[in-house]
Image (cartoon, rainbow, N blue to C red; front, side, top):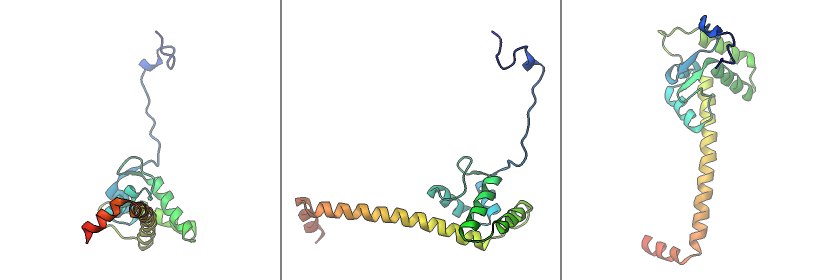
Length: 149
């Protein structure tokens, strides 16, 4: 049976692999260094699903990290050119140099984590409140309050 993708047996002649530029993938530690935050903060953001878009768990594209940084600058009301400037600085870091902490990224990512934590905390408080209301009108509540005293 003939291969429809290679009708005349062209696949036998050799294949060419094209590498697309600008698609560097970084691990969590390198991505955190690239953003100027700690790897632990990036891990927490990954768990809370509020940080940069991950290629897969613990792996990030540099262009996704660049977009995330610019979005944080825009959401803070700062010019996107400053975010792009910091993207250029991050791209020019040498691997042997110590990792500089970016105060803006530290503050902005902390804000993102606090927003997610507040959302989750509010939902938990609502659920606990509903459970208390339901249990307060049942005979089970008298047993529970008697045991607690």
